[in-house]
Image (tube, rainbow, N blue to C red; front, side):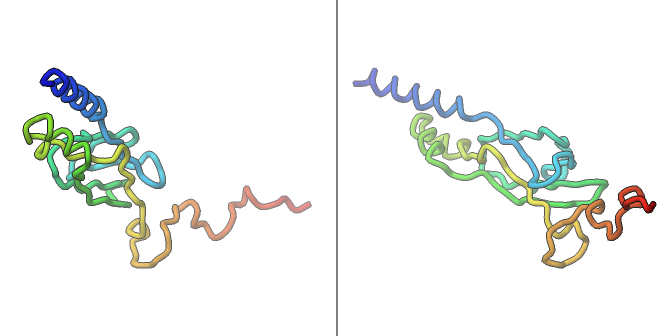
Length: 140
């Protein structure tokens, strides 16, 4: 019986450790924005942070040219995996087994417009009122 319990604990622990990995941070628009986690620059395309750990709170910001276009205030969550990890680590998993989802999406919102309107963010390139001279038809 003890052997069966030990094997079960090893299988549960192995499954949880295999799924630890990293969480990818992306934005809901534009994939080349600078990503900051708690004020520290982490990258601008493929940004990853540790998926499993303590229940810390993080402020994730997406910036372009120093302007914050979007932010996400998030923290790791208590999951079934946290409970399973706690069961095979004599309770330590309650402290270190909190998890982020596989992907965190930073919404790009109204702060990019520098106003309080309810309009979604529109790129300056999309805001052009008139077409360029090059886009107009030729007059014969």
